[in-house]
Structure formats: C-alpha cells, structure tokens
Length: 287
Image (cartoon, rainbow, N blue to C red):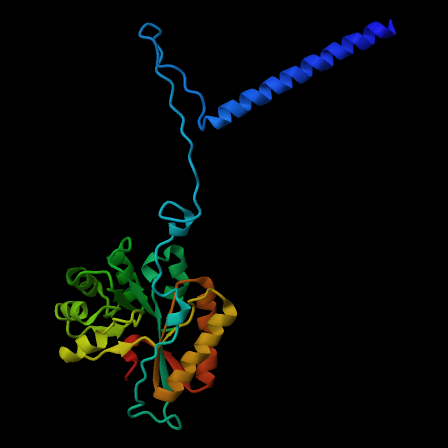
C-alpha cells in the first residue's frame, strides 16, 4: 500500500513540474514578442466588434509629457534673481531723520484662488499683481481695489490692449520684465499716470531705458523674498530688503500668494516698523 501511495505522489509531482515548465516557456515567448497577443479581426457573420489592439505605454520622468512639465513656469522662482543688482542713489533720504518705505508686491495674486483672501483682507497696504490671462482678471482687480489695496498688472506676457483693459478696471500700474523694444511698445500705449515697475528678471530686461526714453518714472524690484518656499529663507530675504530700504530710502519686495509668505510679511511688518521703516502702497513709495 505504501508503495502505491509513493508512486501516486511521484506522478503528481512530475505532472506539476511539467505544467510549471510549460507555463514558464510560454510566458517567455509572449514577453519576448514585445506585446500581448491580438485576436484576429472579427468575422463578418459573428456580429462582434474587433478587439482593441493593446500597445505598450512607457512612463517618463522627464520631458513634455511628464511631471516635470506639470506646473507653469514661475519667473519669480529662481533664487539667483532674488536680489536685483541695480543700485540707486538715496536721493533726498536721510537714515537719521527719515523713515524708509517698503512696498510689497504679491506677484501671482490673480492665480491664487482662495489663497488670495488673506492678502486682500490684511490691514497691510499690499500691492497685488494680476495677469490678464488669469481667470476673471478684471473682477479680481476690482475686488482688490474695493478692499483698499493696490492692483497692478503683470504685463510681461500681455499685449498693450490687455494691460489697458485691467488699468481701466482699476489697476494702478504695471510690473514687467521686457527688453527695451517691447517695453517701449507697451509703455507707449498705456496710461501715462500708471506706475511702472521693472521686475528685473532677465539679462536683456531694460524697462528702465524704455521708461527714460518716454520720460516716465520707473521703479525697480529689489528683492524676491520667497524664491525658495522656506520660512527661514523668506525671513532672511526680508531682512535684506529692510537693509536696502534703510540705505536708499525705499525697497520693493516681491512675494508669492502663499500662506507661509503672508505669515512672514506680517512678522516682517512689525520688525520693520521698530527699525524705522514702513510698509506702504506702491503708489505711496515716494510720498
């Protein structure tokens, strides 16, 4: 009896081994073909559609169809551009008797969604930039204006007509980074009373030269405080802005509409006031 049982289980083991080997060989042959088998096209009389042909999809970590292209380009996100190298004289300013003035521009306010609420509701006289391409841009400008804040147009990628439309909606100026030719075209077609800020984001940026040729006053962005979304970095860059203001009388700081940046600005406003500087609206920078 024992011998019969042993023979039976030996047969089972041999059969199982053969089945596994056959499956392995079959799997290798399918894998080496580089694709799954595709059924033959349907017969005219079976009434069924032809099967969907399957193809191999390869995921990529780089390139235009990968995650590295999911977010829009942020011109204010380069720490190398965090401090403008354009110095200016401290005309008419005395650090011993005058208070310095600092204007804060929130550069992506029009695309911030619910994140805009804290900036609009703040007691600080912030300046908020809206791009013509932002959803409901004109309505956002009107909301900013109604809240007693200053709206400016982010015009680097906009036409003169688009900028003029938002100026008509209530924006008080424009912030741009353009070469001289494009800047001259833009500034020559918008309200002469609009405030002009050179964002200073590119080597060929020459908004200042264009403004001078049109006899228009221009401000230059001094510091991008949150090119890195890090609290300690933002605090450090704001201290740099304070130092510029104490030396020259004014400073313009750009930040993004982020919660961490808003909190840093609120802390900075108290420190700046203690150290002889005030946060002011962009339109009050020279008053």
